[in-house]
Length: 518
Ligand code: SF4
View 1: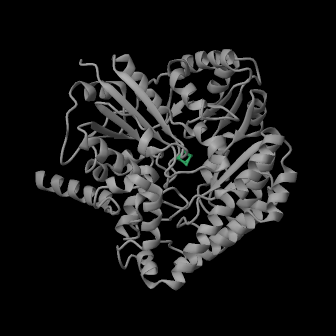
View 2: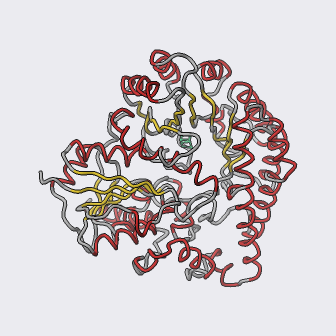
View 3: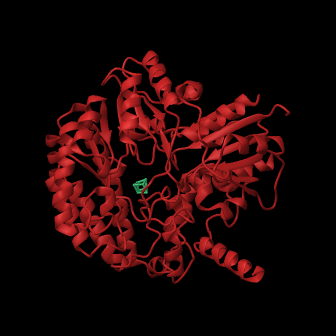
């Protein structure tokens, strides 16, 4: 195979951001798959450069140049930057490849702007792509492996790329690891719900942890598993065999059903310092929180006690609630969450807005059938700048009133003080404070208030939310223009708009073709 010069761009944010939080923490969110692709390309003999965009770099000047092929990994929130960069690279004859969640969620749209769009990616797919890669225009090719890879390069193999990212993390340095793909649960809104659960090789995990103990006095490892610890005993035995107890600080996202008290004792023993369980709703998803049929106040009491138990073993807990689910009861859901903030004051509450990410979750078909998906540009699909599903139980003004009330309550000085006092460890205390007063707490309240005022003041703005027009309000267009900076001029015409019902239309077309064949 001809030796290629390959660039890889890992987008972990969507806009320039010089905040303290971004400078301290963004580099710790580097993705695993861009590093994996880098290893695979290198093992094939190609020359690779990987660029991590944390919001501090100049996207216009610092991305890889003089390359034959560029891989871009992006969440939907970074899709417009990715589209603009792809257009610029293509104008120089570079072959462009899109991977990551956006490629999985909106492949039809991405094919308009990239030569290749990747679904599930394994080493064989990567090798075949590079062997025969050529410009694919006007419409790019969609490629996907039949199943997730059984193994991925571990930390030892990815170290060159991990250490490059960690140079950008001046305070805490977090190493990304992964022990499993997919999830056995099927939360309707989740992009991992359709991926079958699959553990990765335990030998690789053991070797990586031993390797890390030689690199750091006390490594910090973040597990990127969608739901860590599903085969709990197997993972704990692996960690216990690999390294002395409590010699590595671990961060993981786990469902409440995994976090029983005996399991918490073992997690604490093995050094787990931060856990992010999803509570999601007071009226649904009882299986993943082990609350069965309990709903409303009964579920709240049970979950709050459980979260307080977790906090006795694990110093940092972030609880996730999906805001705007159809199963929620208005306005009780919001009031119950406020009660939770008081009853479990040390937990940091995160409030992602319900978002239908293209074809990533089956429930999106239902929203599209009901004509409830608003075509907000991808730039705003980050679970907080826009909810792209019309709420079932509220009008938009009511929804924003409740959302603002909840955010103001959760990030009031009273709640911040309570959280600070109730958190016993030093770093978690300051992390909570920083998050509350930065863009995540105060910043979002300001943004939600602006949206709420425009819903009243600007009829066209409201019409957009109601699905009565698809003309993008100036408010959103201006934000995109500012965030893209010089890349704005490379944004392909039409990229601000996408078909919000592309998934449904593709399914209908498949059904039609099947009918015709039958
Ligand atoms: S438990 Fe978590 S990872 Fe699994 S489907 Fe639900 S939200 Fe997704």
